[in-house]
Image (cartoon, rainbow, N blue to C red; front, side):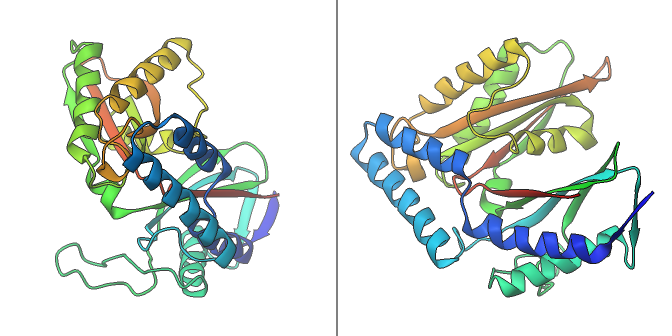
Length: 281
């Protein structure tokens, strides 16, 4: 059994909060540069240029990519041979978020009560998803999820007899309904299977895949490519001003489900895809 100080988690999460919010990942930037070459709309090209320039300024000046610095969604892979000392896992993560958002001068966006709307003041509590895995390391992934894109996400419980075409239509309609409101070009995370609890999480985890990295299932790879093509034919374009770049990727993840169920969730993500990860080893 390996003992790890909770402070290591706190320090890692603090760093990830700042890193994710100020440094657009290389895969997203590469996808944007590719989209710039392929975009035919003058407005679309100009918007993509501005998005790339904004990311460059944010990285250089250590400023947030977007004023909405998001809900801190933390994905933990906790080695089963790890024993955390001097604090609990939840306390360590939330302390890291609090310190990171304070030091990074990041906007605090969490309302403690969904109806009374009082701000927590430090962007906590984080949303924490923990998975117990073999080993004695801790892997931490942090997704800073903006409210605009999250608001345009959707879930639907299909009949088990529903066709692939019906599911596809739901995915495309979700993107269409998002329109310009969730800041395209999008990354579209799709979860299929599981149950009502898990399908939304599956869709969110689909966003964590590098842009351009397809599913490990060949039939799903084909579907991802087809859906991306159809989504981009919607003509919404960068920031909704028209063009052929409505999305950078459609990522699909599937899980086993009950014989009487077919849950589908679509988690929309804006172009400011703020994700960073690290391992405590």
